[in-house]
Structure formats: C-alpha cells, structure tokens
Image 1 (tube, one colour):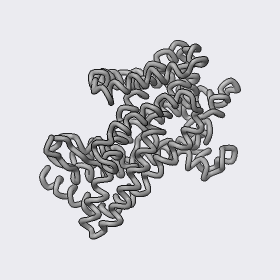
Image 2 (image 1 turned 135 degrees about the vertical axis):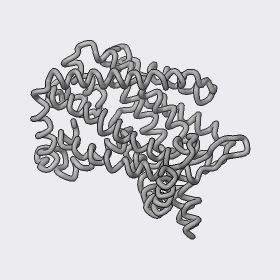
Image 3 (image 1 turned 90 degrees about the vertical axis):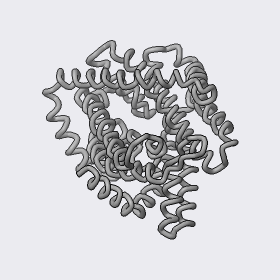
Length: 369
C-alpha cells in the first residue's frame, strides 16, 4: 500500500484466489512424485515432479533443466526472502518498541542466528515445536485486533473498499501507474502465500495422506487464509486508519518497512498493541526461517548431495546475521527476484503436467463417491 497505493490490495486478493489453484496443483504433484528413502526420509517438491514428471512426457532434458533452475532460485530465495528479509522486516518493527536494537541491530541478528542454529544444526526440535503452537495463537490474536479496529472504524470501510477498486483501475497517483500497482499486488500476494513458486510442495510432499488430492485440498486453503483473509484485513486497517498517508510514517514507506507501518496503523487505535505485535512478528519470522531452511536445504541436497548439507546450513545462518545489518529495500529486491524467478520453471511444469493432476482429481472423486 505504501509503494503501490490502496489499489495494490485488489490485485493481491485476485492473485490469492488464483494461487489457490496453483497451490493445489503443485502440492498434488509433490505427493504424486515424492520418493521415500530406505531410511524412511521423504523427498519431494518441484525439483522431483519437474524431473520425474517431464521424463514421463519424454521431456527428460527439459525436466532436468527446469528442476536445476528451480533449485538454484529456491536456494537464493531461502537466503533472501525466507531468511534475511524475515530478520530485517521483523527488526524494523521490533526496534520501534525496543530502541536498544536501533543502536545495536546485530544483537537481534545474533539472537535469531543462535535460535535457528539450535534447530537446524543442533536438532533441538522442541524450539520449533513451541513456535508451531504459539504462532497460530498469535495469528488469532492478530486477527482479533484487526477485527476490533475495523469494527471501531466500520464507517470508513465502504470508502476504503471504494478507494481500493478505484485505485486498482485508475491508479493515476500511485507508483508506476496501472502496471506498477498490478505488479506490486502480485509480488506481495506471491510473497505471502508462496503459491505457484513450488516451495510449499517440498513440505506438503512429506504429509501422510491416503491420496495426493487430499493434500492438495489442504494446501489450497493456505492462500485463502493468509492472503485473502489476513493480508486483506491488514490492508484495510492501514487504509481506514490513514496511516499510509501520515507524514510521520513516510520513512517506513520509503524504506519498505511494511511491518513498522502496520504497527503504526494498529498502534494508532490500540496503543499497547505494537508490543504484542512485535512478539508475534518475531515468532512469524522465526517459524518462516525454519521452513525456508528446510526448502533450501532440500534443493541444495538435490543439486550437491547429502554430504554438503552442513555447508548450506552455515551459509543460511550467515545470511540470518547479515539480515540485521542490511537494508530492507536491498533484500526485498533480491528476494522478489529469486522467489518470483522460481515461478517460471515451476508454472511451466505445472502446465505441462496438468493432465496428471486432472486424472488424480477424477480418481479421487470416484473414490469419494
């Protein structure tokens, strides 16, 4: 909203809906082409269905090329959007309530580096297990706060919705005109739900289900929840409070500090909420980093073998620390490039393998009937 204006919200929502179909498709394929090793470990994801699925279509070389390209881009995305950007974005918000971190940002980076390292190097899964319980709870509190603010300012909602549609179609005052607003909406939607970029299929391929389509149905709910519900409610809060127009918040917009802008918007109605939000954002960042370390590591291993896993993890932790001392704008540009780049080999593969998904869906519906 800060960069693309309220109209970017419309395109974000639209891409969220489209993302439901692409996420269903990639997660069904992730289940269908996964491999179970002798040691019980499950290996799956875009690199597997691109290489194996396209081999079945007599496109072995194209499949290998797309799988390799996807892995390289996913590794880059895991270092940027899935790691360093999570650090800098959460730090930008947290240092508004803990000024000490404005002077010593490396302390935050080192703290996250240690916590993530305990999980991915030390195998201390209890930390990530605690986060997996707390994160949904914090998300619930966040949505309750958004609902409260929108209820208090409900008289502003009709004009906010009207503004979103008007700016989406006639973005004369927004950054880059119509194309700029559309692109910003698409980027933020893809960044929030990962639909179409293939990363989620790596995690979903490990789920225990009786049929691949079952996991696809679970997966398609994610873009609806995180983009269409959570991100839209956040957007409405920022618009109805007018925070994106406040002169005091223009520094957040100029530096791509979306988290800090959200905190300012919510804090303008609930004065104490930025403190609770800083805890939530820390947990969201931590859980996201653990997830992306798994995505990146699976791609790294696919390219370089199991024995090289430790090298990837050390580089990942280095980027965790670097995230605390690099600006958000630089990391966001790098992250968008890597994460959107993943979509090209993945969506081409989804298109070529769409008949396989259709056959799986028809079979599943027969079983259900």
